Amino acid sequence: MERKLFVKDEFINFALENKILPVRIDYSSPTDELDKLAQSYNIRGLPTVVLTKPDGELIHTMTGFYSKEYSMRELKSALKD
Image 1 (cartoon, one colour):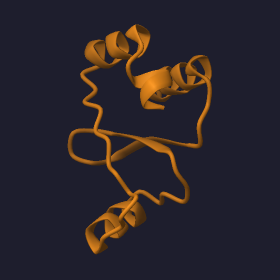
Image 2 (cartoon, helix red, strand yellow; image 1 turned 30 degrees about the horizontal axis):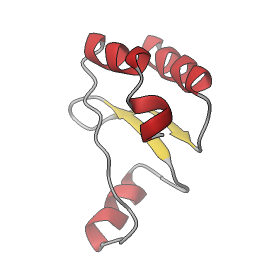
Image 3 (cartoon, rainbow, N blue to C red; image 1 turned 180 degrees about the horizontal axis):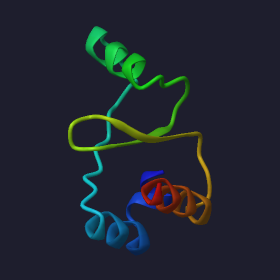
């Protein structure tokens, strides 16, 4: 996802316009803290994109790898709700 979505101009502009701060969490070496975080957002697979409000309230979860076009549609739709 990093190479196929997060570095693309469309995503970067979308993130800037919507004040989205992308954060990548490496789950290759799980810790208790990461397990708690995954559990709090009900993450069941990787990769997972989680949109939250600044206070951590869940807005949308997207699990799996999808095309840039599909991912952008999902993200834009999630912010409309």
